[in-house]
Figure 1 (cartoon, rainbow, N blue to C red):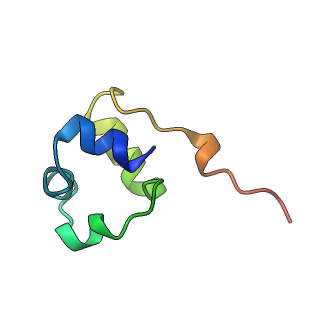
Figure 2 (cartoon, one colour):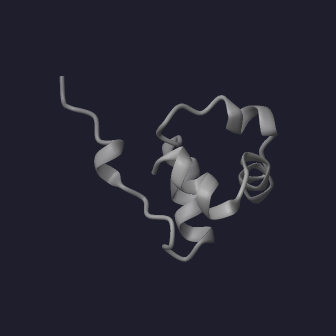
Length: 62
């Protein structure tokens, strides 16, 4: 899940932080791709309107 998509959905980083019980600072430190655990929670909170994309998190086997 991309951070920009979540911001568009919720309207602000602060709103995302509140939904996930995180600090604004924690959300502001996210890169372009939201951490996997947060993406899963946002997918559940939004009833799938924000999509969890496993391909963004699958790591290539070494």
